Length: 209
Image 1 (cartoon, rainbow, N blue to C red):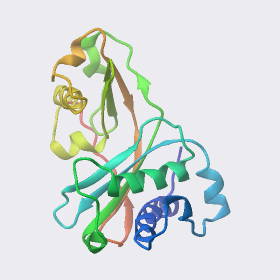
Image 2: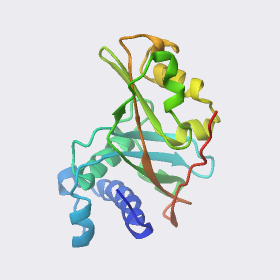
Image 3: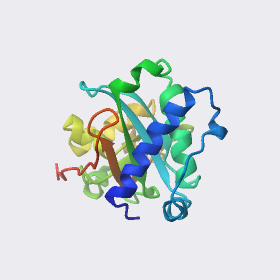
Image 4: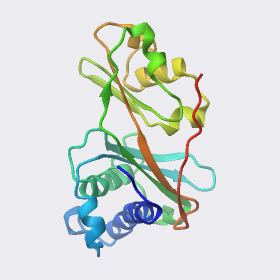
């Protein structure tokens, strides 16, 4: 899927507007505003999507929730992810209206997760930092980290695998076990430069380590 700058701006603006309108005592299914027909048609296709909310200017995480699998039309998944990131992330208190001028919104549209089929000790050969996000699944446990996370934390591939395991509540080296499945995916990322400000595509620097 290709998303141009105008469409990316729409996605991020839609995420912010969803939360702004929710503070006007409107329920999720009542939040509707004008959508260009061409954009609506394009974003009616099903894609995974995550919404990340950060404080500004410190860029500390304030909420991040989404859907790794393409189970919703993108526009619907974006609305749900925006509301969940703002109010339902168990790591944080629900967002308050006064914070709207102190946070930025970031939207990541995901490709379908792809199972990495290889020996457990060969996963690093099939992962590229700055391109791939990871999902680790073992039994009922599952953890996901977006492509931008290892870049922001300067992790190598081994650390990326370990951190994704720990995100799933597993031991760091559980990706080496035969009953653990590791998936990779890519993302198109658009983010606010400042609260309610310009929107730009976030290009990640690839790294082979």
